[in-house]
Length: 347
Image (cartoon, rainbow, N blue to C red; front, side, top):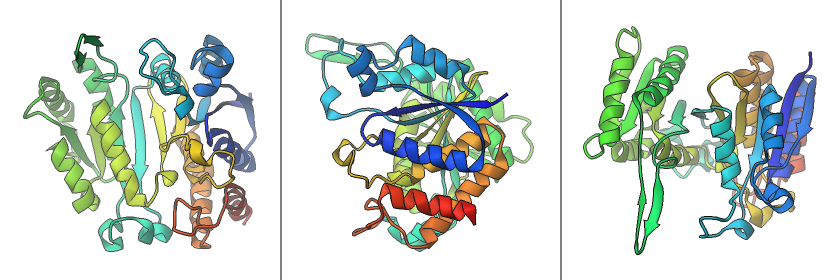
């Protein structure tokens, strides 16, 4: 039976980078691809950011690869208007994807591209494990006259299942979990800390530390090598994972995976749709290609092919190729960078 991969190119540069990743996947295996609209593209065509037909196609796939969603033409403050991001949130919720994994391991070839000194980030190898379906992003919200509210809610069960993911990951890595919260202020964070501490009990060889989110933000800059697995709730994880992305020198280098439940995983680059460069042929495809590697490893248990793609990306960068987001004056385009990865795979 063939392996089915649902492709969701999305908006902006999404179609360009997903096409690049598809070529790389085709170079390492045989897959059955299907392509579908999501986000702004779906709003324009169907009036909604995610149709039931597309959702069903994703449910039937073995893995889902997403490009990016969003753009200024769909920005609105009208709470009743469809927004591209609703497609992504709807996918995560409907597929039961409660854990977002974002590895942060700066390429040796790109150490000088980081805004931090090379000696500070060298050797950094962390995994951000972010809870995806709870917290303030999914709580009750509304407006009443000149006041507005957003409610943050977490249950013990939600915290337990994301903590399990983090501790399992730490067991395969260096054995340290840093749980990030705001327990000195927030009741949800106090429940978070209590629950994570209980899940940690009896796990020999796993070190647990608790860290307040403001300190974690500082330590990501001051001592990124001190982290192994960062475990945190939805909004904090959203912010910290984007901050950690800059250790690599560009959001264009960071892949991610959303997993959980029994359904397929969703794999996507961390960066947005970059509508200002859409169609220009200069988008960096590497985060999407590395997301395809995560798809193979975390979605399909194909470690050998995943590792081959990651080595090919490193080899392309060692050649000195740089897209504009990676270096001032970078001249490599999407096609040249993709071709270099494919050539490295051939070797």
